[in-house]
Length: 451
Image (cartoon, rainbow, N blue to C red; front, side, top):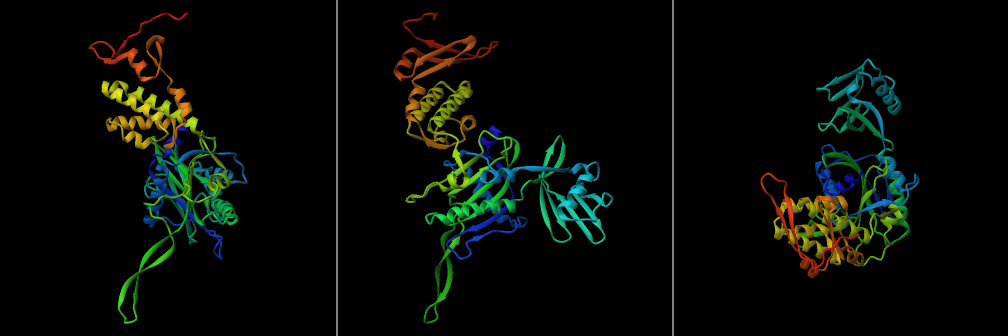
């Protein structure tokens, strides 16, 4: 679970599974507008790209940080999110028709109140990608997508549904959500609307709730995204005529335009499976607009969450990550590169604030080594921009420790003049027929065995 969360930020191949949007505007007569179904995504690629783009951009935003729910309770946001992410096993796609036919028939009968289905009118078609059930004028089809991650249901009465598919032990198993996205998202929207309605300083918004899949570390995972989208004002063209009938192009203000992909969202949360409880529950973005004297209602009042790290923990994990990364690539670097990286790490830890992405890109190292540093630091710390705890940082770098073979350990004061006075050179040596090793030149006026 730990690596999954760290991979959330740099997830690739994001695919939108389901999407629903509600309008939360207590300043308008209709107030709360709750959608009754999800948005059809098939044939709506522009909308899919729009939300995938915002998910990607928000996850990569350096101000997005790891967070945890304070408590998980069925009656609050944490419990709703947990139930939304829970999945119930239904049947194995490979065993229809077959040993799971009974499970399949019982599920369809109970969920969709269908009494004409039985085990004798089920067929597999289209190279086993379609299950079709026909009884006279009655029919239903289940279609497996090309990625084998989702099944779409189409019924003769026009009803549709979607199910999750997982490859487990070389079999395709079909699951359904324990809480329907429509019902669950409406509960989320109602709670956020109640908060907005009580404080006029909080801007109205649209709440978009979606399931998406993403790949990280060659593993596909499913996440829940909550996007607080604040409509903005934009100009649009309009053609008007003056008193003489001459047409000219003018502009009108559109007051409820959605932000473009190039604009940053202010508040959103990306939540992973909460059972078993992961080390961190979510990645959370809560950007506060300048001049807005509003408490962090989204994090505290709505999400009921708290950031996973404080400044001291971030500083500690950053230092450990950077040292681990340097150790990993040390043997691949030239002596001047090792010295440069060593100095860069010291400067980073002594700074007031750091943006890890900017710091790594500024290193005079190869792209390969930059990527290795980024991956190792990300495993220690998912947060990307934060303040350094300077007091704790000074304690971290007060002394430097090195270890070698057979329990060899050297601890030395970290001030540059004292360090260079003792450690004169560190040289990797490679000789044919022998394992590579380091030749360390140490100058010391005292060399004593410690009892």
